[in-house]
Length: 146
Image 1 (spheres, rainbow, N blue to C red):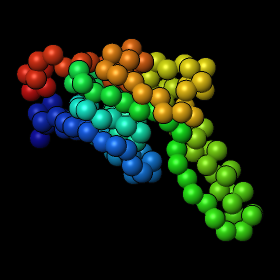
Image 2 (image 1 turned 90 degrees about the vertical axis):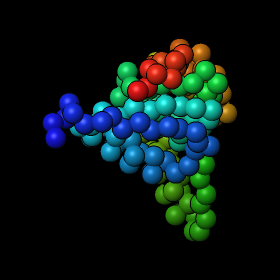
Image 3 (image 1 turned 90 degrees about the horizontal axis):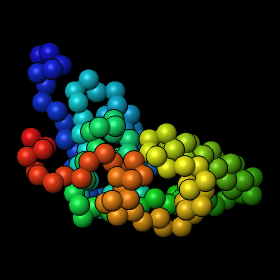
Image 4 (image 1 turned 180 degrees about the vertical axis):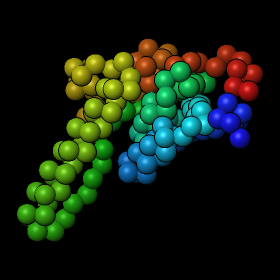
C-alpha cells in the first residue's frame, strides 16, 4: 500500500501524565512513521501527555476547546549511597535539560518563559496552548478530523 493511501493514525490524549521514557519512545515512533500521525488533546494533556501533544509533527496537533495542558519539572526518587545519589542527581539534571530543549524546539515557548515557569505547575488553557505552540488548532467542527 502506498503511503498516500494509508489511513492516518489519530492519537486521542486525555492524560494525567506518566513515564518520561515511555512517552519519549512513543514520540519517536510517531515521528518515524511514514503514515501521518495526528494528536487530539481532550480534557487533560498534563505532564507527559502534554509532551506527547507537542511532540507530534506541527500542523497535526489538535485540541478541544476545553483542553488544558500542564508543564512542570519532573519527579524523581533516589536513595542509597551518597555517590549513587549524586550520580542520580547529575542524570536528573541532564534529563531536565533534554526535556527543556525538547519543549523549546517543539513550541513557541521562549527560554526565559520556560525558566520562569517550569519549577511550578504551569497550567495552560486551550487559547494558551495554541498561543504557546503546544498545539496548532482548536477543533470547532469534529468533521475536521475525518
